Length: 548
Image 1 (cartoon, helix red, strand yellow):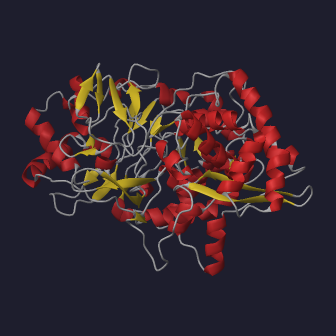
Image 2 (tube, one colour; image 1 turned 90 degrees about the vertical axis):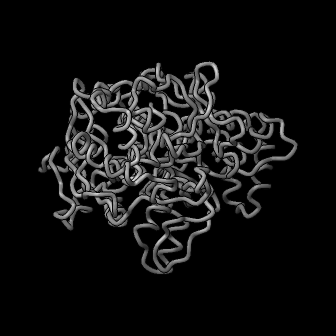
Image 3 (tube, helix red, strand yellow; image 1 turned 120 degrees about the vertical axis):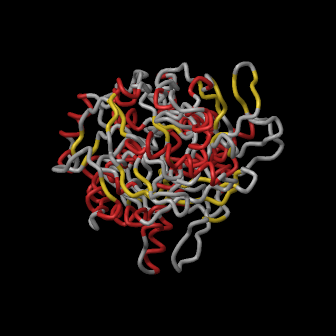
């Protein structure tokens, strides 16, 4: 599920409810074709369910007219980079961290692996209406955009074989939003040329959609771009960086808590998590702000005693994530709950891939003792030893700000005004929201694949987590290789105070500089836990964490 994929996309372009003279809804083209073939499993929904995100309401905030956006990106990229030949749309979106997978490594079931006509996680279908006759192919983010990540080979190099449930630690929704904005602004200066590029890229386009784009999408997009130019940015809040999103800013925008004409200081950044063992969470979000109504918010859950109806309990909360990530209206969220139950049932059996590099099992054995004594209280209790390590229980323990000392802007962003807005929304009765004043210790399953670390993605490797005095102020992230020794973003050199990739390495997406001096991005905190550990004990702990 696209937990916290948080960016309000710029096409508030259409004023689509007026455009279509009423409500119109589409459906995922890929999922609907599978549904006609027979039962659809949770993994298919995880990949292709639109969860109510393809309609005239979401087109006022998040969903994009695919053919116009794709053609604009190609024209803009060709001109901006002075290319002699245009790149494909998939190659351009790859710069922003979207993945065009060759295969899915953990695909299950009898159905053949899907082929992708657009990058992973961009779910699309036709939104149509009879009067006036309108048809527009629309895309929105799906679960897999944030929660399907690349795997790594035996050298630590990324490969386009994705694993459903891993975080996409290179997805840069902020750059994507700005890129689409710049592309549309460029292409809309010459609408005839833009429409010719649509015809070139999509020769199968129907006359009805071609007319819809020319009469409605292009002129309304032109007016909206002019409005956004007055704001000076395509969104009213900062969106994040590779692998880091701003779901709180997006939710506040959707619930009308941000002035659409003023850039807001909303820095509630969170890194995208791995989805293993989410059913052991008694509350959701990094601060535990959401919990099922009538249940304890911070309580230990044992894996052996997990209730069989756990998916039904958490689905109403997970479905609410479609509001900030897809622009679904709160009153429409209940329609997505049934699909979310199937997705959570799929994730109940999900396990992250094994660490692809070498592990010193002797050191890891010693590290397991250190983990049990120093880490399990917050991060969960695992089976003893280093063979077939399994999570036995998760404490769901809230660590208050004064205890952890990590950047507070994320939990502070869940303020009283937001809680009240959730409670009074048309979906407020389905979950209990509150302010908490701290962060819940994260699940560490698949932790080796989730760099950068801490709740805001401010620390590039596990080594830097355990050696806090060495944490860099600035480092590259995005499209990175995996460092087997330090475990995390592979950084080989320092240039002008910034840790960067090896000069010979060619990242698969465009890296960005993470600057820990900026608001919401501090890399301090979670330090005193390691003060009494020797260097050897810290390195042994890293070896053990590779096994989780």
